[in-house]
Length: 158
Image 1 (cartoon, rainbow, N blue to C red):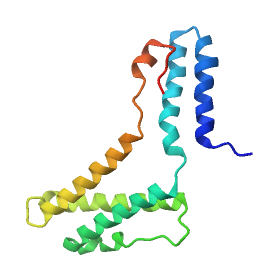
Image 2 (tube, rainbow, N blue to C red; image 1 turned 90 degrees about the vertical axis):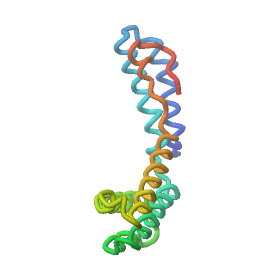
Image 3 (cartoon, rainbow, N blue to C red; image 1 turned 180 degrees about the vertical axis):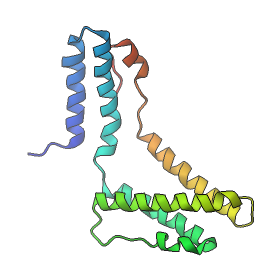
């Protein structure tokens, strides 16, 4: 029987809260145990990569590079990079990394010329893409438990 990863992580967190932390008397050790909960809270939404969100990220990166390629044709091949179906999560992550590298190359070419006609629009598109990507990442990043870790408190937030 396979237990879903999220359920397993939730079980580890519940066990840490109910069976481990209450029995740890050293404040440093309690802080470390709460640190484990903090790591698990932030690891859980990232571990089980689903193909759909990755595919959407890859499509957004391709679309950005295609728009940049209108002004900088040298970046057109990166916009057309594709994977043969089916798209395994690891393959999508690899392609995403390649597209990120191409976007980095685009930034190096566009940013110094961002005040020129055409390049200002590209700089705005890149900025918007990066902002949307970071916003999405922040939505799944939980608030850290630094204060609680430091004092070795028992009530760790989820």
